[in-house]
Structure formats: structure tokens, C-alpha cells
Image 1: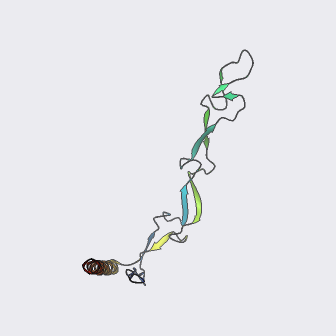
Image 2: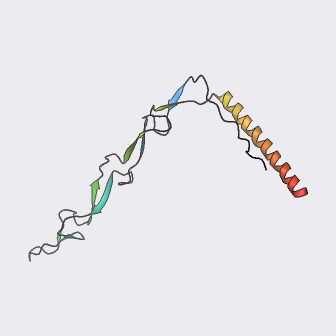
Length: 142
């Protein structure tokens, strides 16, 4: 058994980035937003009517002339729709981690560099597979 397995070559950043592109995670805003937990990203949520005289959408005032009036607070729906405090359906979680709040990211490498790194990784994977197969044969045949 070897102590540490060799690691694949890591892609290197292009030392001379010539162009930048809007960050996909934050859509170029530089701020990370996530769907609001309260409204599930819709901007509105429902909650039970909190009016003390409402019983499942009915007004239960005890006067004889008003028996089953529709509750004026929830319109008889019992669950009333409320605008969420977030106002947008998403909450801001601070600077985007992917672009460090810049809103733009450098292309990591040009296509020739990318092809070179992909080739190195493929070569590394092929060598690792062959090494593993040799070790398996040694263990099985020995």
C-alpha cells in the first residue's frame, strides 16, 4: 500500500486573463441570494387568521343577528395570504462566494490551456488505472 495516492494535475489559471464574464451564481450582481425560507421564493405566504372571533373562516360573534358571518379578516378562507417581509422572494446572504462580490469572474484559461489540462488529467487517469490493475494482478496472482 502506498502512503499517499498521487493527485491529478490541477488546472492553472491563465496568468493573463484577457476577458471576464458575468458570474453565473450571482448573475453579475456580486451578491448571493437564496429563496426565502418563509415564502419559499414566492413573495407571499399563508397563515392562519389570528382574529380572535374567527373560527375557520366564520365570524362567531354571539349576537343573534350575526351567526355565521364571513370573517372580515380572512375573507372566510381561514388561511390568509400575507405579503412576505422579504418583498422579493429571495434573501441576500452577502457577497457571492464564487466571485468574491465582484460580480464578474475571469475565464480560468483559454481553450488551448484547457485542452492541455484535460489531456494531462486523462493521461494521469490512464496511468493510475494501469497502476491499479498491475497491483490487483500482483495481489491476485501472488
